[in-house]
Length: 262
Image (tube, rainbow, N blue to C red):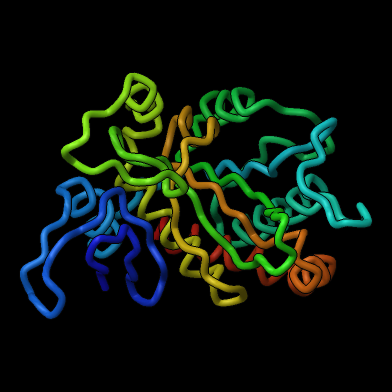
């Protein structure tokens, strides 16, 4: 489902944010959309190709060490601890299915975004999934969202879209430039859609979005970053403290990766 004048779309019931807004008259079958979105988003998601065999999945627990990430108001639950627990669970599930998996960190250690990308490169990873938790000033904000790189020359989902007739500024050209991770744009879309589609079975759907995070920009393989809930939301934080919900979340991530690979 497409929405005229908006980058918002729905594919098989899952919210997807496109690189550019399609345009067409309401009620008309004649719609136009960018070739970038047609090829690297819709075709990639709806007509996927088989993934390479013997792919190593690199799981990246967000934050760690002197970077705790998000936290509940009472600091009882830290993002760095929860993401590590989730990543260990995902790794265990994948390995039980005969899928090779490794972690960028398996303890409370500090890693920069560049360190994480280098570990994926050195381990010849074929897939990179960075696991995070969200935080917002509004305690009612909730749900899950999955991020990939915007296409070259297109804004992030959080940015206002520039009308086609307005020339980009030098800063915009630099910020919207091609990144190494853009080499995998179709596979990024396919991976992130699988993740979001499986995660929303257990939480509200905030959509497949686009952002130029460093771990995605420098990824040497198809990559996505998942935000598995809000620690600032009391209800979601309470769920994330339970082993049952963490196992459900980990299984959803593992199921998505399995679907992507097989």
